[in-house]
Length: 232
Image (cartoon, rainbow, N blue to C red; front, side, top):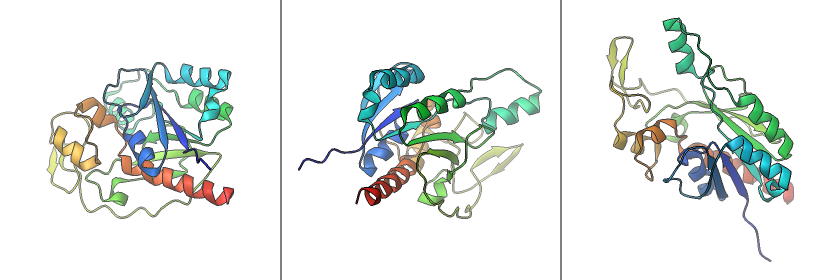
């Protein structure tokens, strides 16, 4: 008997940090991003992620997927954006695609994962992962809303020290690198690659936006384990 591998649709895929984790967990992966992502390591559709998802739903092609992962932009709720705007007295609008993304994910009828950084993005924090859970050189806290499935939250270990670099005029050394922004002790490209376990891209913007593959490998493994238990 031929066994078909589970397939995940990776929306707002960037360069594929989430995708590689799902692949390592055992998924086939298809990505979609509005930018040209030549470093993306799997089958890829360039276009608006929500328009593409709506098209897949309308045509029934969404049925070839087992799981949908989405990392919609939400600069309005990002901790860095919120903090900077408040400190500077800024109030300009920012893109927030969380709600329309959830509406389409619900329409798929499929289990889904929606990811956001720490901040005020309006997602359920069903799961929070941190680089220290996986022995990484970044903290990179990420929250995940899990639709139509669930998993027990793993314990959040105590951080071993500071993120290296300048903050509020004070320089601190520490076991983690700052994989975002420029200057002020921020990580170099090789440091970001090593800290997050990402080797297939050396584009700074892609690295600073990436989810470490260890996160979605853990999520994907948990999903497939739960799915197998249901099917058994």
